Length: 206
Image (cartoon, rainbow, N blue to C red; front, side, top):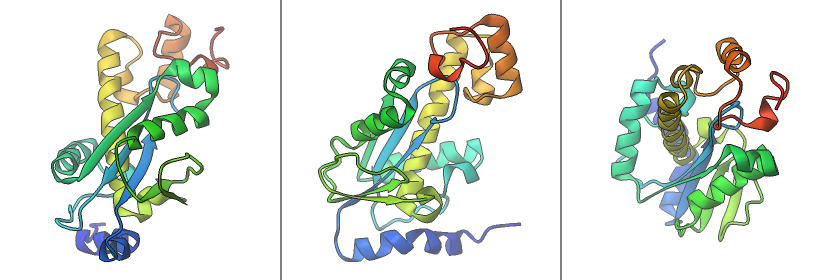
C-alpha cells in the first residue's frame, strides 16, 4: 500500500508543529542498537527547522536502507543541529545497556542548546533543558524520527566497517543482531572485540 507522504508528514508534525509556532528550541533524540550482540549503541540528537519539511523523514525502521541513506544526507544538510553519541561494547558490559544508552544520548545532546528534548522512550538523562519521553516517539514525532535515521545510518555504517575488520560474522548483513547466522558464526569463531560479552553468554563461554 502506497503511503501518502504529505499526510504522513502532517501526522508526524503534530507534536513538532505547535512547538515551532511558539518559538521553542527543541531537539529530537533516539538511539539505535540496544538489542544487538555486537557493536556500539548509537544515539542521535537533531534540531529540525520548520521549513523545509523533508518528505521522507519517518521512523527509520519503516524506510529501506537506500532511502535512509538519502534522507540522512538531507537531514545533515537541513538540520540546525546534529549530534551523535555512542557507547562501546565495553561500556555496555560495564554499566548495562540502559545506562550506556543514556550516556550515548547525553553525548549526542551535549552541544544542542535546546530548551526541550523530545526523547524516544528514555527519561531522566539530566540534560540542560526540559525532557519529554515519548513512547514510540520515532513513529509519532518528526524530530525524533529524524534522530532515529541519524542514529540508525551511523550505526549501520559502523557495522559495515566492523565487517571488514572482523570477517566471518557478516556484520554488514545483520548489523550485529542475534540472527541464527550470527549465532552460528559466534559459536564457530568465538567472540571478537566488537561483541558485547554480557549479551553473548547464552551462546559461548566468555
